Length: 260
Image (cartoon, rainbow, N blue to C red; front, side, top):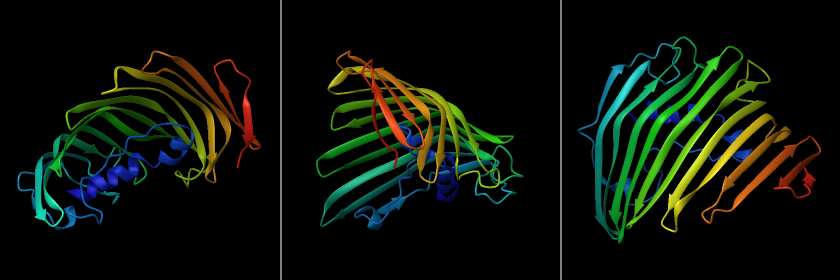
């Protein structure tokens, strides 16, 4: 079960580096498996209730099923020198699709809900992630992406929320190397609340002609406008060229630094 979901994570976020460099917050399809940290490595697991249904065929060998749905809960518990801990992760109609099972670079579609829970050491956490739509789909010479979803995190009695909706296109410079250099265009919105920000914050973003090459952005514009928890509105524009990066806050004069 873990392998297709790990592949889903890799596929969905092949654009994560250029998006992050351009200032976009990108939620990751975190998989609730240990990566070397006690106590999860030696915990007692029970995943008997997990089921996978649908069309599990993978003709192009990209690790993504044609149309599979994941449901069920895994629970774990541990008691040892570090204390007693328990938790779970759960998939609620988490659907993973390959938009073209004849092309290993066709992309992926993911929707559904993932939930994690943890208690121990005086802490209690529940994290629910609703993936309304997480699509990255090849369309001719470019990729269309559409990421929409929300988080709700309840931690020791406090609630945190985060919603996002980001869509756009990625056009590779070289069709034979789709995840190398390329150009991003996108629009999106983000919002959230927490215990100290009940009124919430919001952010509108746009990317225009943002060209990514060799780990840097060398052309294009990113615009951000939003309101913080105090109701203060701010706008920021970032413009890249091969030589410099210029940042303009509200109507102030731009501040430029070398692009390196």
